[in-house]
Image (cartoon, rainbow, N blue to C red):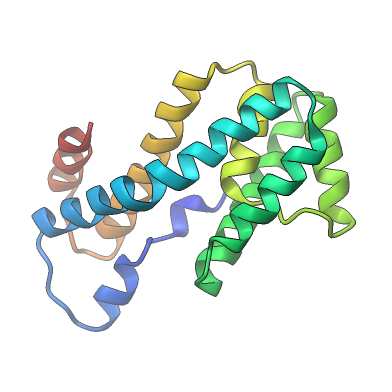
Length: 169
């Protein structure tokens, strides 16, 4: 869905010729998980999943607006929207779900942004994934995308990237 291309800030460090170690990459990702992804995005995703299961589209729409407003950096906000709506479109291709369809219709009308955490929650609901597994998938996806970016930029080697993922479990 494009999330793999999002470096979560590592690219700016790399472009500014700042030398960082694999240990520092792990600490950066850990910090993001503890300070942004866990307390904000993960909670949004789980709420979207719960609201989808109870068919509360008005609240989903409000949650999407709030999630979008929390992304203060333009590039982060746009990456969240692109990745989220692409995921929703992809899942719609093989799963029919009333809430997911309404979300995509509302996105076409400009009513919702399509943020990644909300889209992920709706997709998890459409696929019948329980909240705990969806949460683990969400956190793992973030971690792998950030570690993958570090590897593509040459900040980490493959074995270092695998160790970072293992240590963050």
